Image 1 (cartoon, helix red, strand yellow):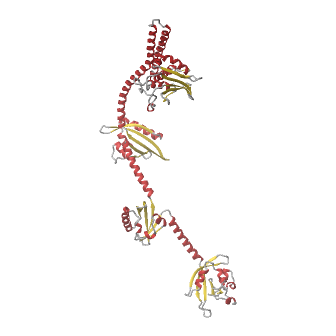
Image 2: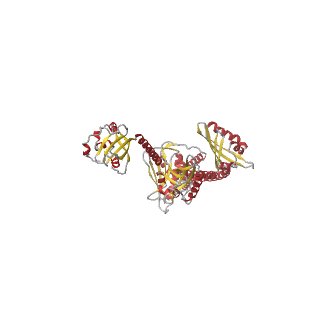
Length: 621
């Protein structure tokens, strides 16, 4: 069709086309020169007068997307052609028309003339669009439904699978078509699935099968396929529709559940415990395998309260009923023990734990555990006999330990009394008796005797569990008052004691006799500490100080020091590094200091020797 129909433009439009009475749009046009005549329906539909439709002007009423289709049909020489196009209504809306274009049969018309008849098909197009939309929705549904959809022929050959199916199986429609769907199936499942499918097609019933799909490189996953037939009006199967679901997680959960059940059974077997479940509303009971074994019933015995009570010892039946009724009535946990009595006279001991739990608004369920504690009971009896024997042996050992403690504590002041008594005799046996020195020695004997009395009193207080008599006193005064009592021991060991006593030391609250006992032990240990050489003077240092919690006293010596391996054991009973030591001194010291709320400590000195001391609070402990 040309853009400038000059010849037709000079011809006036036809007043009558002979087709004004029909509802269809009818026109005549020349292939090269455009439209020539239009019936009345054109003007009524488009609102354009026939004069304004001449040439190519009438094509403006045709939707621009359809003009090419119309032009191709117009120039065709193969007789009539039919196309669907849209023509614009006078209201601006486009309507669908079925356009038939045929060669003009009028002999007066040129051979390039065509006759166009357009019939309205809006309703048909709307129906087609609806069907296409519905089909598109179905296609979208099949592709996006969260499962794998497939279809086969009546013989079982696959001819459709949605994208989810193909993607999950890493296949294409070509590879799964026919019987290709079986190739990705696990070799151990393939023959069974094929056999099942063949038998299933024969029966024509709904089907369900579980199998694995994948490859050795990617691994296999478990799937579940279900299918149903589509039948014709005669009831014959014409197609099979199926859906496949990934059940890998379910399979793993089932496997884990089986494993847990096996562990539970094994655990109950090892621990000799069984579980019991009861619905107190319906009276239904459940026993685990181990419960059957403990009660020594066969599995065909129906679980229940009556068979359980038949195994209970006659003397314990009322106890069991009372405990279970208490749990039911108060909905609370109960725990108790009772005996089982078997026909052959054997007795078992059980521990029972019952836990009522509300499973629903009208349902009270109870879970219980029964444990066979017969071996435990027998072991307890054996242990009781062993404990009785151990108590007897411990009593003997304790008597020996007390004897050693008393001997150790009294030995020091008695040694002082002996030393001072011998000194007194020497002063008196001189040609000219030294009364002053003898008097001083006798005074030390008296002090030593009193100390023996105090030690015995304190030991008796300790062993009779009497509390010490605490007083407030100055620790520095205690140090200076104790040194004269030990002067003979210090001289005997050729020792000297240096003092570093802190000024303004707060008073401590303790029993001064016991603290003096501790100080004496520390000084004696320092004087007797092993050294590399026994020649030369032994040097001890007593130091007092205040810390954040109270006051401290340290006794340092010049011996071999403390082996790091012995730091944690030097305060234990019977531990000693001296050849003739009993190993009770520091143990007793720790007991005394800790009873006053203090602590003992010991460490090796960097320059040699060791420091042992204690810390005491300034307030009552």
